[in-house]
Image (cartoon, rainbow, N blue to C red; front, side, top):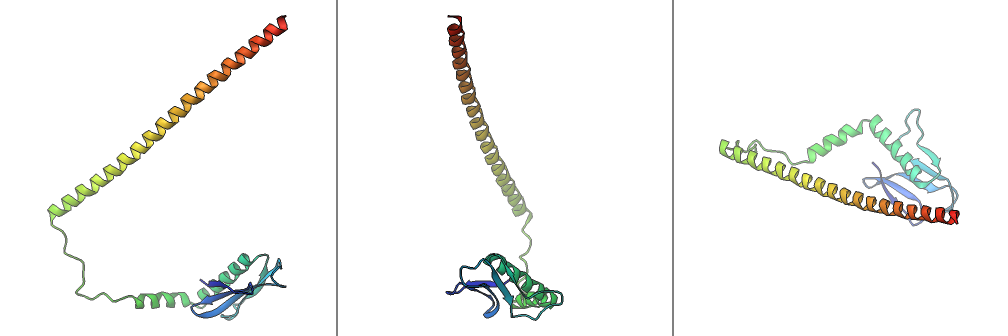
Length: 167
């Protein structure tokens, strides 16, 4: 993955470590609607473009990222990076092994504790569901009251209209 940094000029430089490997810049100045990208830190892959243009700076940076990723995979540097990362981790000595298994009594206590935690979590979920159900019932009650009120008002209006038509 390339680390991108915006420059004062509005251009973006992409770094791999401390080395500039890519750039994305406006085609004709800062107000351009076309952005050119180029990956200079890697050789050119067959049937792939290491430069091009996009309609915005984000797409240009994504295109450069994509080419860089393809180049890393094609040159098989990814496994080397993984190996280097593994080698940089501190080695585990033979003395530092897993602790001995806990006695049976401690296992039973641990199982009981874990079961209690699960029951507590389930109870909390049940309480939340009941709270939501009560809220829904209250909203339904209010809606029914509004509907009844609207129905009553409509009936009164109809009665007034009938009376007015009868006169």
